[in-house]
Length: 311
Image 1 (tube, helix red, strand yellow):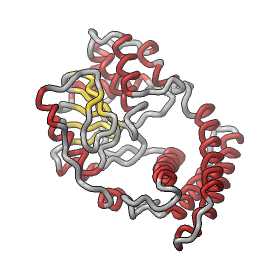
Image 2: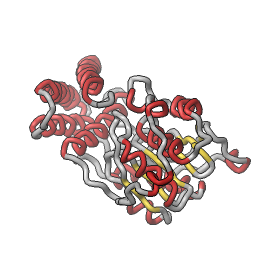
Image 3: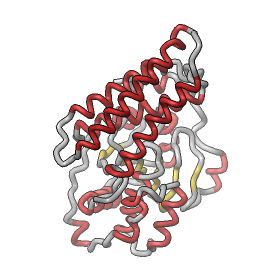
Image 4: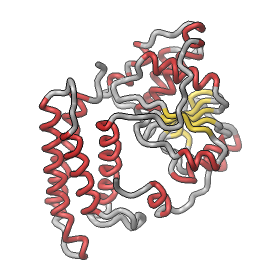
């Protein structure tokens, strides 16, 4: 399963929670710098979006913002325990990269409306699913929020145009009536059940992010993360690709399974290239980069066809 959240956090240094400039007031519709909160965006007075809170730094910044409810739309297990220690409630309402289904949109809007605020809505990086979910809730709740303003918020967050289901939400969303909102689900779990495929994809994303750190460090162990073992990360990545390909995938074509198997072989090749570095030996940087790029290209073509477009 890779390194645990606790081990990852122990490999980081504590940073100051907030910038001094915050004391002068927080801008709406602009990115704000905060320790442990990637891509923090103030949507409205009591509504924020961003990336997953990074260890205690992130929750400390959220506490300084006054946040009382944290909503994750990511597939990863929320850090419920740390949130509790900072006096916050977690709600887990995952969405995909292909957009926000209407029932989920209404559920998110009701959570933002009814649960104690301010509310922080996040995904992993805070650029795509998190802002899209937050903007969707804002459009459902605030009649003065125009489509143009919603699109501007997504642009500020960095939501990429290829994520058509996300960037198209402001124009595709039919705003609900008050009665529809009142009838939306109030099932707000701390930890939602997710499919086996989604679980493997979360792990794949985590391992891929760790390998980006390895790549940045010259294909060696990142100096600020002694918990990241380069060849082991590649091995775990290969295992998750293999297990995902072995799943029963009703309605998913054989092409998806083939791409998963291709990505597994590229990850396995990367592991073999990185293995000598485990014993302080030479690492062939060109071979490592080639294997990494092949793997990334396979993931990209799979995402374009199966993950990033509305269904």
